[in-house]
Image 1: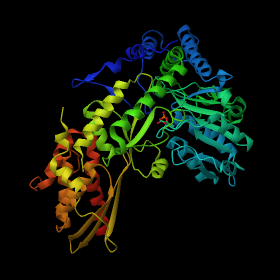
Image 2: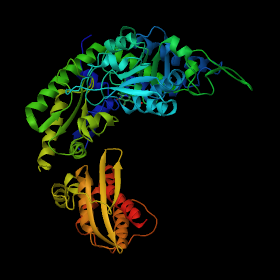
Image 3: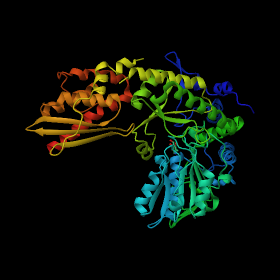
Image 4: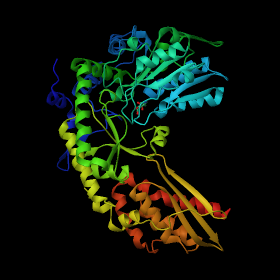
Amino acid sequence: MSFDLQRVRADFPVLAEVINGKPLVYLDSANSSQKPNAVIDAMTSFLQHDYSPTNRSAYTMAAHATDLYEGARTKVARFINAPRAEEVVFTKNATEALNLVAHSWGSANLSEGDSIVLTHMEHHANIVPWQMLAAEKGFTIRWVPLTSDGLLDLTNINELLTGASAFSFTAMSNVLGTINPVKELCALAHQHGAIAIVDGCQSVPHMPTDVQDWDADFVAFSSHKMVGPSGIGLLWGRENLLDAMPPFLGGGNMISDVKLEGFTCADLPAKFEAGTQPITEAVGLAAAVDYLTAIGMHNVRQHEREITAYALETLTNRFGDDIVIHGSRDINQRGATLSFAYRDVHPHDVSQVLDQHNVCVRAGHHCAKPLMRLLGANATVRASFYLYNTNDEVDALADALAEAGDFFTL
Amino acid sequence: MPGLEDLYREIILDHYKNPRNRGTLEPPAVRGEGHNPLCGDEIEVFLIVKDGIVEDIKIAGQGCSISQSSASMMGVAVKGKTVENARAFIARIKHMLSIDEEGEPDTSIALGDLEALTGVVKFPVRIKCAVLSWNTLAEALDIAAE
Ligand SMILES: Cc1ncc(COP(=O)(O)O)c(C=O)c1O
């Protein structure tokens, strides 16, 4: 199928918003993406006609809601080429998915004298859960450093992985846009007997994903970054690992039996889905997966390559040395997330001026403070593009930046 | 919609570009430290308090134009004043920035350059930037009182 940008844009009603006479220029999709009508309508229709709890009741509506909920699981499994739908666990978001792995797998498998490997470009969601557990269990965390152009520096990777129990890393940096060689990193982890945990938050929404080709052990990602609703996240894990892990949260739905003396767990995936689940959100997520599948993830990636190339070229041509774009310039090694410093203007002030033009970017540390320290910046401006962004919007960003420059000439 | 000029008054940009009382002080000066976890702005306030007077103040750290200029204007406002005056000033500024605190601030206190910060109220996300240095000053005054 060919990719028709204007048709894609028409699918996202919010993109037609005009504020103070200026169109919305939404460049914050790495933070959270906008939603197409297909998702909005699916959720609305479900709430209007079909809403019911899942799994617990025998009436027709409940059975239908359960089918939709489980259907979402099957669609997600297909989307990432998971061998079995039961290996897909619904969580609240990717953060909860990573906490689930750290808590359940980590607490059963890590103790004093052990070590795990993370990288300098991780989001706090893939740092803090491990630090919390390390404080309790006494294992050590080793860090893969970065090269000057923002790629993982794999020079000493064999040393770092020697004796390590797990290697947990992001498939794509939410600050630098760097796309990591996931398949190679999983293979390296396995060579050293470590499991491979992939934070797919920034990659799954933007390019084809095949967890079997990666040969990963766990993959975490969030619905809200892939045109789906907020409130639901995903963990895929290998069945044998999930089966062997203790449960995460306890309560209803995750048990097979409860007696006064104790409980027994339900089978996968219910074992990790305690309590009433995000049912409407699962319906929305299913619609999001259908939407992206119909467009084609190769097409999404190709569009983002083009817009990234255009953005790199436009910003560099217009601002030269006044702009420092972090990370790789090679569009084969990066996604459509651009962090930059503009002259000496503080990112907060840049984003304020951009906001006057309805250009929405994120200014801050992007929940990656260790990486920010490495960049020597407390904050950057981050513009992130998705399947619905246009070259005109890159130009709008550049125009607004020029005004920020005029305003703050020091 | 409020314009950029409402936020970035000339005085604010002047204090941002030419910050007053920049630097650090060695002990026995006391040091307060403030962070804005949202955007990463950092402020350090060094104080020498003697006989109930803020004898010297130095401000270090980095952040956006609003947080830095607010800090610079604050230093000018409280240097040489009594601790009591400084605390009243903090309450006055917080009130101006629509931050509710217990008790009525003394609105007779002249704001001087700090009047320029009134525009920040129209940009709610920036209030945190403007108030950071004042909270840090309050902390430093508490430490000095110990
Ligand atoms: C790389 C990465 N990991 C994890 C997260 C956390 O995702 P969520 O906030 O949806 O849990 C994000 C989102 O900001 C991210 O970019």
